[in-house]
Image 1 (tube, helix red, strand yellow):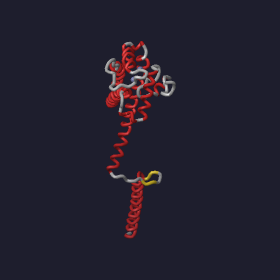
Image 2 (cartoon, protein in one colour):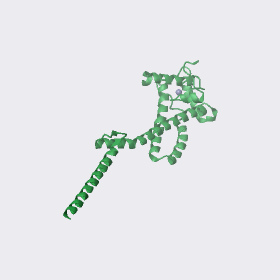
Image 3 (tube, protein in one colour):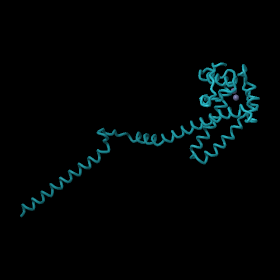
Image 4 (cartoon, protein in one colour):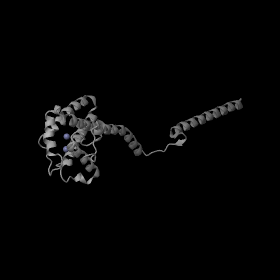
Length: 223
Ligand SMILES: [Zn+2]
Ligand SMILES: [Zn+2]
């Protein structure tokens, strides 16, 4: 009798031990499996690095969206400027815009007089005309875009607008500091082609718009 009890007790212990073994094996495999991808052990990163990685992966889409918005805004501004210059600045339908542009900018700077000591652009300034489409588009964008992207758009359009005014000024001013750069001299030549042949090169910063519009003329092509 005593022996039977003892046997039963022993076998229960061995079953329990077996079960514990199996459980601890399962726990071990649960603990190791997330750290193993395709047989490679995951490297454990320090907490700071994990935090940095998480921050970067969270910010990356946002930063890309900001960059895309800024670049797109600049391209729209630049195309609008080229189109207004082409269709209004050099056509009587442009009214005051046309008269200002021809009577001032193209009269100050024509043929062989393409640079001056100081920029002659205060009179007949067409800048206010650009604000009409800019405010119209900007007003629509305010309702369509999230606020942070709208702010990016406003800053990018102001910067782009300033860049257009800045470049036209630098092209026509004697001894611009940008003269040292070959890319600038190339841009300037392309703009001067516009002053010699007013039906070409309407872009001020990007002349690829002229290639698209079919109004592009190289500086060396029959100046
Ligand atoms: Zn012009
Ligand atoms: Zn000019």
